[in-house]
Length: 529
Ligand code: GLC
Ligand code: CA
Image (cartoon, rainbow, N blue to C red):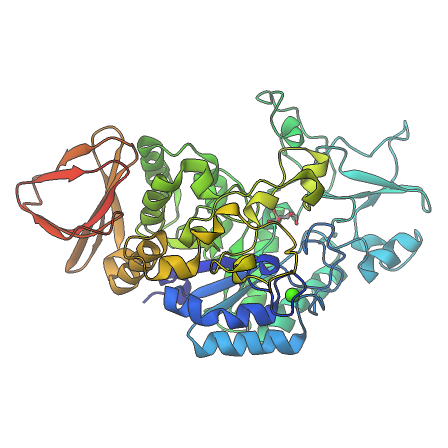
């Protein structure tokens, strides 16, 4: 038996950018409802929606000022209930974002906490006296811009910790009242029918209680993210305490049954990521971000598969991510042609794929003119801004691409290429990226070998990646050409023939009987063997 989140495909929606329903240039929950038929047609199994909670939007919703409501800009709780109902009616699960590490500085909890040293909520956040010289309590750096992670509060003469913006104070999960309040947030949404949570920077929630200084990073060079000047030994992935946090979440979601999914956001090497599965009592899917930070090369990706499969505990289910709202678009990172190969990889590899909205049509990074920059990270560390990958979904070739009404200015500029790169244009084009993505999704859903079979990588000539997916009575061979040159591969002797069922060019169905597989530049194929 397999759970839905093992067989299924997750589609991430950045709600500001998916569909505007009321003409303010910002996407919203009713807008998502309008597009559910598209998602059902595409064939994904679940949507994950980035935060839509009340928020001053210092970090576009990752600074929550009320965990149990909807920001009026995105709609109402009724809209949310309708979204869950309409999704479920179409067989789509709903995963929402849970942001446990920090609140907004406008959250009433923090307002109380900062009001005086003896406020009952003082200890809900991480407050410390200044160092003897008056400076911050330790050397930890904020992820955005790499300044100190501590902000001095005049009124009470202490510093508070913020791993991200100073408008995002870190919660103190060691306080049992914080724990109780935050776990109740999960219950609030579970009662409204959600199917799981994507847990924002889950690996940062527990810190060293002694707040020891982080050591310097010997590999840091000028031009790298200034926040990486230190190795975050004490400020993230602090074991074993972090595993206790994972178990709190797991126990809470299991009050609502066994098939609610917990996805943890973390950027860790495989062995440390694998620890977050626990003994099957922690997270279901610690995000695997390795593809986001590795060169797109056949031998590198083969190594990633092999290493990941080696370190995963037997009970653990893998997952893969190619893009999200924090990273440049895949089509811009590796080029349009290779983006098709990458889609074939994501949808044929073993493990739950998470797709980022717009990648199915090959959306690219959109250059943002300085006067339209929104992401605070861009202001703190120019070049690191995430706006280029957060632009409005390109639905059709009308003014504003069908995202918002003509004449309205969308919150971020549209891609210039939206007249050709859009859903409507690609839907009926037999060789488009969208047609390819949908064909891959259809194949994956239909083939047990692809959605839950085993995986084995094979030796292949330079520039080619080959692997087998196997289930009882079914075997698929995937060969991906990572180069822009034609390539040939000799099929292993065990396979006398291969029946090509899909090519990234979408023009090939053929039976290869002489063991000689020819691939065109940037071509990937799926074959039954
Ligand atoms: C996560 C989110 C990112 C956000 C940060 C702080 O990394 O994905 O968008 O800015 O956490 O909450
Ligand atoms: Ca709107």
